[in-house]
View 1 (cartoon, rainbow, N blue to C red):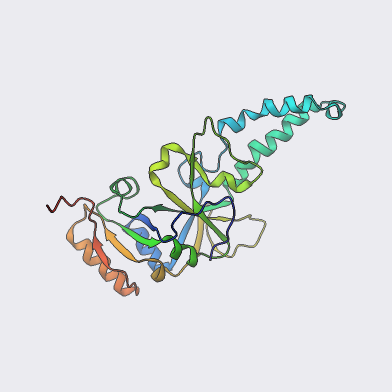
View 2: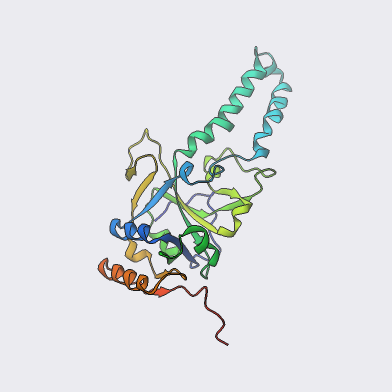
Length: 255
């Protein structure tokens, strides 16, 4: 079971479906390894992952003005420059280091399949998606992980609580709002012993009961008929009880 943390907002309904869209090769790796891959946040392709907002960056002058109004601080030689350096270390340099310590598994939260997610996150023809439930995913995650909904904000105007370092990894830009993402996060400092297998600098292999996690498997709506047979064979070989179905997102009206 994951570890609860107030920064991670939970969905209103814990029984809501969660989906993971992937190419066939990643699915095979998952069921062979009986594991999930947690990607290091700075390797996820979005330069804003784990980053601060412009509104936060603009707080430097506000911070310096506050120092200048403090008579005790004014008595310290070179106080303004010292204050700026302290602010930059805490607000600019720290997030850069944190990006290398956050490891993430991203899922889509929705009761229905998403045509957009098929197009955005798979190569489509030889791809699959798996469906589980939020509560199932939460129960199967290791205690070292945290889990919750991503919060979408305006990275030019909005701020978040920078005194809580996990705030950096639960926010994304509003342009990604269509993802309806929930994410599992593991914080790992290289100075500490790691209970998970490292994949170079790219991520962590996190063992999980994949058979218990997967409730349904869907093959791509643009796949050729043999893919359904291949995936069904893989499911049987690795002891998955989940039904293997054709995606329904491209079906026309039946009325």
